[in-house]
Amino acid sequence: MKTEFKYLTGFGCEFSSEDERCPGALPVGQNNPQKCPYGLYAEQLSGTAFTAPRSRNKRSWFYRIRPSVVHRPFAPIGRDTRLVYEWDATPQTPNQVRQLVDDHPLDDRSNLLFCSQLRWKPFDVPTRQAVEVDFVDGLHTICGAGDFRARQGVAIHVYLCNASMRDRALYNADGDFLIVPQLGALVITTEFGKILCEPNEICVIQQGMRFNVTVFGPSRGYILEVFDDHFQLPELGPIGANGLANPRDFQTPVAVYEDRETDYEIVCKYHGKLYVARQRHSPFDVVAWHGNYVPYKYDLAKFMVVNTVSFDHCDPSIFTVLTCPSTKAGTAAADFVIFPPRWSVQEHTFRPPYYHRNCMSEFMGLIKGQYEAKEDSFHPGGASLHSIMTPHGPDTRCFDTASNCELKPERVADGTQAFMFETSYSLAITEWAAKLCNKLDDDYYRCWEGLKKHFNPYRKSL
Image (cartoon, rainbow, N blue to C red; front, side):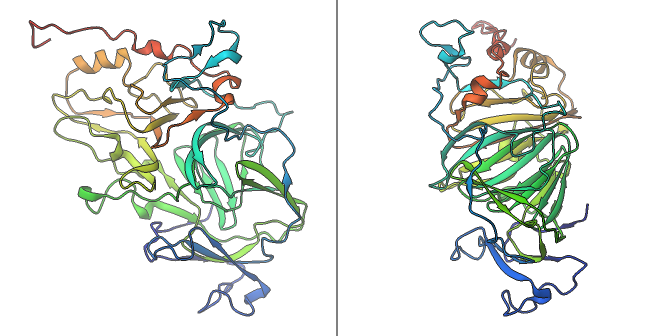
């Protein structure tokens, strides 16, 4: 898969690419000449307002065989989907387990309130060859908050599919998708070119960008969708010039066009609903492009971990790969955080994550391996949610082990990749996540039941 390294923060930087079959396809000296080379059309894709500050202004120019306006009218997609944004449809409570309403039996799941602290077992992937489910049809919303119309909020989804999209493309008019593959590689064809995204990599498809997903068998992964703004690298502050995710390690595709006339579906996600339009050609007919509004991918193995070498457990913000800012200074609409393999060297410290209540909502997923704070019960392809101010932390076994182990330098999380979608919004669970997926772990709260009272007012050291 042909890709190029790109600098992504957009501070005065501009990228360009043209299909090698059409040298000189990029106009020289201006964006929109009277006649483009090779008889192409010029088209701009704007990711910010025209008047956004230069340091944040994002747009790209396409030089394509046909402009994207050439399609028939959109109509509702005409079949049920699990992509939903009705945050008030399922009642919520702050309990650690599902709460019975009016003492109904547990098997009557229509009368349950759903809590703010949940764990899901690995989500089922369609495996029957006779039932083909592509990326669009395999989107399932777990939780979210806010309003895409007001451009404030987030949504969290999983994709569960076993078939490629074929002559079908999707674009999101509501926000950006950050895609985290967990099972199976994806080939994502975009208007900018192709991206190969494998487990332990991520891909960001920004608002309005058309894309198609090819899979190679049963595939599963997670998606963080943001409405407020676009993802960017976090500021480094006292860390200095180097650390965390380095800009040079992000990649964008190079131009490769399809000049193919066929019956093609364009699926648009608009106001939380899916609409479809038909056209008689491939939308991936961009011969050349330039700009700073691009899709990109990142290999999580290249993250430069920063950690303490003295005492105490640093806040998880030091593991932030990408952030989407909110209107509140220093508070993210969403952070994408990872917990990669690393050395742990703190002394006189309880090294796993501390017990915690947070003004943010924390959704965790596991790409591979065993998460250090819950090694026996949190599995790849599953998830957990700890909502705003809901207490959480290591299970009983982790606490007992970490409280009594010999503190010496040791490797942590080898062979593991856990991640977290953290947001300042209070997330609501969808009906699919609460009931229909049938993957909620009703015994999640039991992982803390073994935490015993150790207090002894007559003995300072235990």
